[in-house]
Image (cartoon, rainbow, N blue to C red; front, side, top):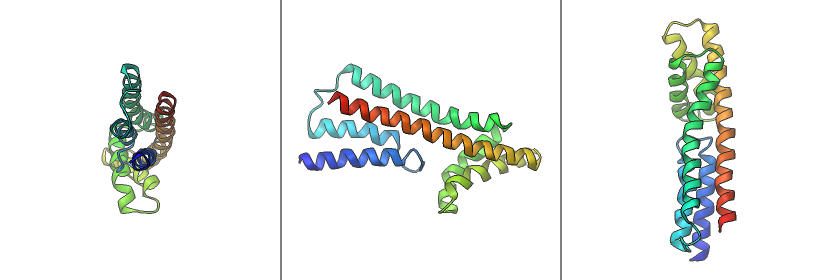
Length: 158
């Protein structure tokens, strides 16, 4: 049973890290779930108030940072709320519509379409599209760092 427990924990960590890039995967929730798997298979005893407080705080920061960093990328390049919404829609559907490149092209195309819908120029729309891609990559970096911090805290704690 120990082996099964560790396989599940590691699988959840991997799914969590893949979720930083692929929005269809649970991301930070998978990493958080790994702590419960550890508790169920081994023991919850090592995890006290401070462990759960730190981990939950990081989860909240991941959610806030994910949206804020992506939106900052769009806004920094002059994008509007429409490009933020379009970029988010493109991020969700892009990988399904354009399998090989949808992760990058989806947010770009979504932001461009969002800007065009509200009447911005093609030049401004393209600029917002670039901002959405840079915001997405920045967001991924932030999520990877925070989720690695969660895993490291877990390893140190046990």
